[in-house]
Length: 138
Image 1 (tube, rainbow, N blue to C red):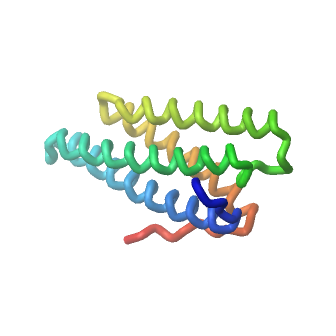
Image 2: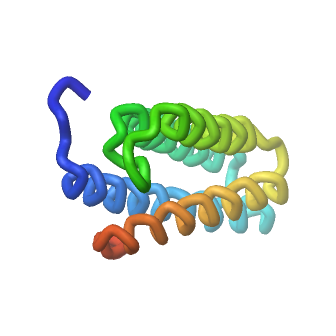
Image 3: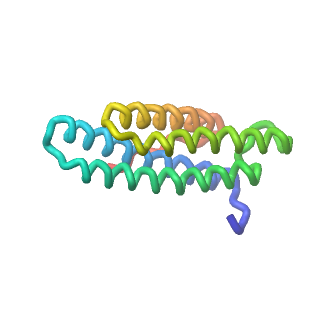
């Protein structure tokens, strides 16, 4: 992040990224259903999961830069809290990214549910800061 981004702009961007990730998650769920019903080649689902993983990586990089730059740290600039918050969050992201390499649709669904719960928790923080959840793009 070369230029400093305002908190408001950062939060709006995060809300938009969350909406886009939810769209990709919903697509992966639908494709997993199709695969389980025998109406889909596994490669189609693998491609969709790969696209989700890439979008999730971009989101995580953006979010982690914001955390390190203290744009998103609640309650002030305590350096140790900033480092710990960023480290914990990055650990959550890594675990979910590893989970997106699941080999069964049941495992994938668990990871997708975990990712949705993670986004929901982040959205509660956005709402607390006055940013409404972005409407799904359809």
